[in-house]
Length: 251
Image 1 (cartoon, one colour):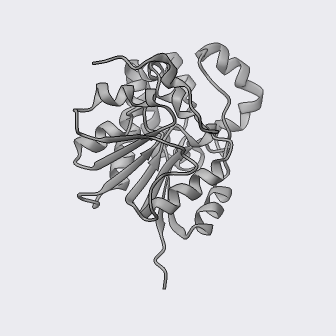
Image 2: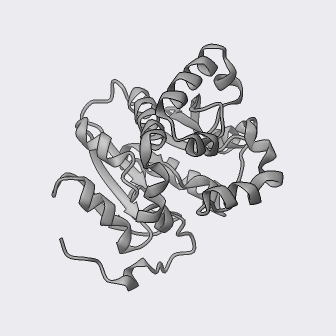
Image 3: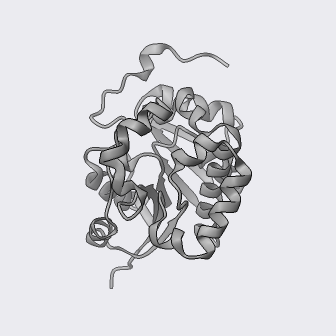
């Protein structure tokens, strides 16, 4: 496969956080048994939220990391992925069969699609790194015919220690970057403003992901998180959260 030239990693758009999440360095955060568990959990929850949507068109905004595009294509969804620079398609080309998806380099805050172009619009590993996050959600709502799904770090979790422990987390993980925490209410407000309601929240993990990465034990990660889920701790204080919202039909 032809290697993309280095200059294609430069974006002409104001928001381009997905360039980093599409990189090989970022993908190394999800290697090993704990990383595999993270991705399996993320895919299982997302596919469950899309259950019943057969022959569905999905727009994956900033999805060059291929974390969701690959399992969605495998399950028969018709997937279009956007990226902020041409280099964002590199992992997709490596992970997916040729012709199995469509890719477009474009501005995530000004998507080149008509209103209601896709059944479902998703964005993962993106929202907390986008400065104009409300505009991003609004644009996702505009091009979605029925549903949007995205993940975010919830302030109602161990993340409340973010300010105090970020330097420690960065020292341990090395490739950690700053991110924004969200309150559920502020996200629901933006969604409702764009006629998206019926919000479903699916917290993924109770323990911070950095803890699982340091222990590097898939067995521990799975067994401990099962206990936290069964006791209700994950539902109350888990993060990151996968959020699904459905469009309300106009009367």
